Image 1 (cartoon, rainbow, N blue to C red):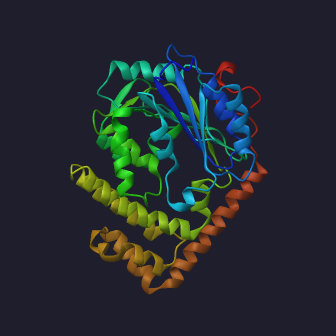
Image 2: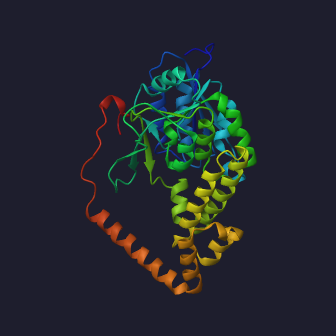
Image 3: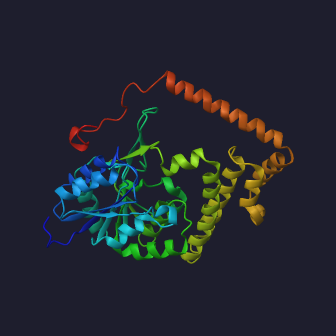
Amino acid sequence: MTKTEDPLVSICCITYNHEDYIRDAIESFLMQETDFPFEIIIHDDASTDATADIIREYEKKNPEIIKPIYQTENQHSKGERATIFTFKAARGKYIALCEGDDYWIDPLKLQKQVTEMGKRPECYISFHPAIQRWVDESREDSIWGLHSDKTTIFSTEKVIMGGGGFMHTGSVVINRLAISRIISFFDLAKEAPVGDYYMQILGAEHGGALYLSDIMSVYRSGVPGSWSRRVNSDPNHLASWYRSSIICYNKMDIFTKKKYSKLFEILKKQRYSSLIRSLHLDIDTKKSIIGADMDKIDVKDQILWNTTFKHPFIAQILRRGRQLVLQIRSYRNRSHPKSQKTLKETPRRDIPGN
């Protein structure tokens, strides 16, 4: 691709302290075989490891394709969303997403998605299944988001009810026509715990979400410092996630002009049910999150709430039981490590050296 060519696709990658993973991501971008030009926009959020140096290495070799954004101060800590920086810098008609600790395994990924989206211009977002791979190899590889064995268009309602796990972020390609609306929502909902889910909803609201059945990316689970690790290990992060999820459901409901109100009410009930059953948060924290919405909780959950609230020792017993289960599970994982891959990838689709 020469400087004079306008990219059809902008690959937007956000990264922070991914020195062990960012090479795989960049190599998987560069291996893409397309009949159109593309650019690679990488946002480094002031990494404290060698991530930025690695990006500079690739930038020097591919200055016409790789367009980094180097932050000198961490923007996430200021409440800014790194993805928005890449969106505003992108020039392509299509935006392909992949975070710095994930990577693609099909050199034709972009070509396939852009071709199919061109056939269905009403669809502003496309996605596909991904391999979920644990960095410590404590679990077998599994497939994330295998919803069908053929190309399908899923409704906005299906995307909403599918939750944040319906699409793997590294599989998503979005039409630029949806980007301004996505940016507008995040201007209103800066507290959104995970932006991927709300991007998926707004990408699908025009003409649904286009699904391709090919498995073309890898999602790494258990990466140190990742959002999921922080939430699962820190009660404060977990509580914040519950609070912001409820707030953002309400904001998205208003933003979409109440078209999906019934679905967001169902989601809030599910979130409250999960909150009540959580053994990682104390009663006072749960009470502060639920607030005046107690009447929106199902009868079974209200009974459970009243039981644990009036008799805290029951919650304590449940918590200890949960801890015991986790200890047993951890012991089994250590005693029976993964012996072989359960999923095979063709050599051409993987990154050399992995």
